Structures are given as C-alpha cells and as structure tokens.
Length: 493
Ligand SMILES: CC(=O)N[C@H]1[C@@H](OP(=O)(O)OP(=O)(O)OC[C@H]2O[C@@H](n3ccc(=O)[nH]c3=O)[C@H](O)[C@@H]2O)O[C@H](CO)[C@@H](O)[C@@H]1O[C@H](C)C(=O)N[C@@H](C)C(=O)N[C@H](CCC(=O)O)C(=O)O
Ligand SMILES: Nc1ncnc2c1ncn2[C@@H]1O[C@H](COP(=O)(O)OP(=O)(O)OP(=O)(O)O)[C@@H](O)[C@H]1O
Ligand SMILES: N[C@H](CCC[C@H](N)C(=O)O)C(=O)O
Ligand SMILES: [Mg+2]
Image (tube, rainbow, N blue to C red; front, side):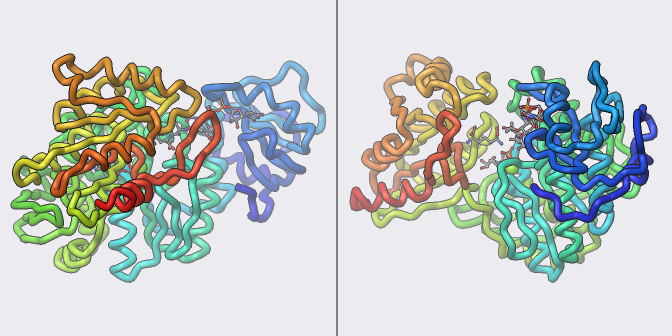
C-alpha cells in the first residue's frame, strides 16, 4: 500500500528500538517504509527481511538506487553508502512492526483492537463480532481473510493478516474514520513473521489448534508456539478469551499477562454453552443460562458464537442485547453457505480446508441428515501448502460421505495430479469404489450435481468465498457457489 502519511523524522522513530546500532545521520525525514525494494522511492526506509524465498538483504543496493535513505537490517552490507543511514537490529521484522506502528501514529491505541487466532474459526468469529458491534451502533473495522472493511467500505485483501506496514496503514485509516472497535484475524504466519509486533490489543481470542501449515512451521510444536506468541504479547489490561475445550487452550495463556477468561461447551467456564438442538436452518443453544435461537449451524459454530458472546460481554456489552443482535446474524460468506436447487438437492459451499474443518462440517451434515439421502462431497487441497493434510482430508471425506469426488483446489505451482495422488493415498482401499478423481473443479461439481437425487446433500469444500482459482501464478475467475448454481440450473435440478 502506498503511504499517504506525512513524513516522520527518523529520530522520533528510533526510540522504538533502543537495541538498534545506528550508523549515519538520524535527523532526516522518512517519507515511507517498505519491505519490498521495488517499491522504494525518495526518502524511503527499506527494511531487509529474510523471507522464505529470498533474503531482503540482497536488495539493499536496489532500494538505495531507487531513493531509499535509511536501511533497517540484521546484517550490514560489506560496502556502506555514505549518505545512507543504516540501522542494525537483531530482528528486522520485529523492528519493522514497532516502527510501522510509530510511523502511522500508533493507530491501534485509538480504538478497541481485538485479535482472533486459531486454526479454524478466525474469519467466522471476527466477522460476527464486526457485524454485531455495527448492529449495536459502533463504528467498526474488520481485517479478515475474505476482505477488510471500514464500516460499509470494502477493501480487498490477499492475506488473512497483512504485513506490518499495510496493516498499520489500514489501522490508521480506521482511526481517521473514527472506528471504536476493530476486529482482526491473527494468523500463525503473522505472529511468526512479527506482522502484529507493536500493536496494542485490548483482547485476544483463541478458537482452537489442529493440523495445518506444517509446511511453514515445520512441527506442530512450532505451530503451537507461534499461536501462543500472540497471547504472550498481550498487555495486562487486555483479556485473553480461550476455548478451554481445546487441549491446547490452557497452554496458550500460560505466560500471558492478560486477564484470562474461558469458554466451553463441556465444562465450567466464564462463558458456558450447551447445544440444545439444530436443523438445517439454525440451532438452539443455552449460553450462561439463557436460551437463544441462532441462524448458524454446527457444533463448531456453537463454539464461535460462544467466543463472540464472551468477547462482547468482556467489552462491556449487556448480555441480553448482545444475544438479541447475535441471534439475527448469518454465517459469513462461504461458511456453510447453502445453495438452493429447484429439485431440493441441498447444496453447501464451505471453506473447510483443514482436516478438522472438513470433519466438523461433515459431522454436522451427518447429524442433520434425515434418512437415506446421500452425502456427495467434492474436495481438493491447495498446492504449495502443507502436503501432510492431503491424505487426511481425503480419508475424512471418504469416511463420512457416500460419494467423494476429489478435485483441484488452488494448484498454484504444483501439478494437480500429484496433489490428487497424495490425497487418494489416504483413502482406504475398500472405499476406493466410492471415490472418483476429476481434476477439473468445474467438471467435478457438475458430476456431483449429475449424481445427486432430490434430498441429497452436495458439499463443495475448500474454497468457500474465494472467487478465483490460482493456477501457475494466474488467478482465473471461479466461484464454487456460482458454478454450483449454474450446474443445478443446467441439469434442471
Ligand atoms: C510464506 C509467507 O508467509 N510468505 C509471505 C512473506 O514472503 P516471503 O517470506 O516468501 O518473502 P520472499 O519472497 O522470500 O522475500 C523476502 C523479502 O525480500 C523482499 N524482496 C523480494 C524481491 C525483491 O525484488 N525485492 C525485495 O525487497 C520481499 O519483499 C521480502 O520482504 O512475506 C511477504 C510480504 O509480507 C508475503 O506477501 C508472503 O505471503 C505469501 C504471498 C503467502 O502466500 N503467504 C501465506 C502463506 C500467508 O501468509 N497466509 C496467512 C494465512 C494462513 C492461514 O491462516 O490459513 C496470512 O496471514 O495470509
Ligand atoms: N470454531 C471452529 N472449529 C472448527 N472448525 C471451524 C470453526 N469455525 C469454522 N470452522 C470450519 O473451518 C472453515 C474455515 O472457517 P473460518 O474461515 O472461520 O476459519 P479461519 O480460521 O479464518 O481460516 P483461515 O486460516 O483460512 O483464515 C469453515 O468453513 C468451517 O468448515
Ligand atoms: N489461508 C489459507 C487458505 C487455504 C485455502 C485453500 N483454498 C487453499 O488454497 O489451499 C492458506 O493460505 O493456506
Ligand atoms: Mg480466516
């Protein structure tokens, strides 16, 4: 994002990073901060970060050639350019977070900032909170996988949690637009890469942790550490609201300074819920003794609703009013989104792209099925992402569906057939006869519709709200909901 912010003096920023070793002038203007050398301009501060593909340190000269006057780095170049100021720090990503926050005038201190972390449920919880607080009359901001939003204004995004500079620029916009509450997803990548360093949160929420992103974190322990890192950073005044039914819930908050509060469907907790009954249209729950009907379904959504309710109460909202608003809210786009058909086939598009999410969604569908209707699942796994989840997701799909069509998700730079072979390897031999492989996602959805009889349930999993399919660096238009609707119509279903 290009900065529209007034220049700052470097001196005033340096107090954020007392550990820094500085070479060169410190009384000079900083017009912008960037971590991409290609975006450097006159008076830009360039941050050299070691990434997964490249080392930002190798682009220092390029940034200077484009006008960068300050370099923030971990290792000094062998040759220093005389007119340039070098700031050497042990962790440039972390220093960047602190500087970005100061550069934009500490926007996160201007409102209530709530971060949501966990493998699944972040978008659901953050979006429900955003919609709920707007309905309660507050001016709100949202930072999520689907989109960023300031009140009515939608700002497209490519990340769940943007980099520290983009993020602080966005938060500064939210401050300018007088938001009082901002709800954001905090991905594990974001914590590991220090994208949220320097932000002041007034609350953190932990939904759950299950298998995902082992390609990036290496081990499950590292993945847990990344998520826990978020709670370790919370200030004393903040709340840390955790799902205590998750095995790792207690670990998340063992070193936090924040006030710990819990939610649960199973045990004593600050916010205790019970799922009383559910249909395809909603569920009936008890929350701290109050019975409420919600428009969302699935036990996983009972957890999400508890988290949202708990956060609202911790933010000072009256319990009855909060529940009244919450009971009217619909699921976010692509989360258990139903696509109706004339012949009463039940179409469901869901963003389940982890083993746990797929299991939850299929268990919910199994629980809701009335009799002999078939469950037909179309699912794939993304390329250039965790490969270990592929056989697991296929195994879950084949165990809990009558018919499975394995297909492509976003292949990115991988060969679709290689991903499909890895998925198929997880399907027990006895189940192979119920599993088809159709690499083309559109054809796979059409095949599922062709096989569906009235009353059957067709689940299209993995891409939810996404409106593209990414193949070899190109994003082609593709929307599961539109294709499913089109397939139903084409077949007169
Ligand atoms: C794995 C990962 O998180 N990658 C992110 C990371 O890129 P990277 O570490 O690979 O960067 P790199 O290409 O190695 O380059 C290193 C540094 O050199 C710089 N560079 C590079 C080239 C050049 O000419 N000049 C230059 O200065 C780059 O700007 C970068 O600072 O930093 C980049 C800049 O912030 C991100 O855009 C990029 O996101 C990529 C596109 C991505 O796909 N990320 C996904 C995995 C992600 O972050 N997902 C999470 C959500 C996951 C979830 O919860 O399900 C998210 O929060 O979105
Ligand atoms: N609390 C939950 N527990 C387990 N599964 C959930 C939960 N909430 C949602 N899901 C499932 O996970 C999918 C993704 O949900 P959501 O988008 O809210 O998660 P997320 O954490 O934001 O994911 P991402 O990491 O991609 O940002 C949903 O489509 C649903 O299948
Ligand atoms: N935030 C997740 C989204 C995965 C969505 C799925 N459709 C895929 O492309 O793998 C990721 O970047 O891993
Ligand atoms: Mg999300």
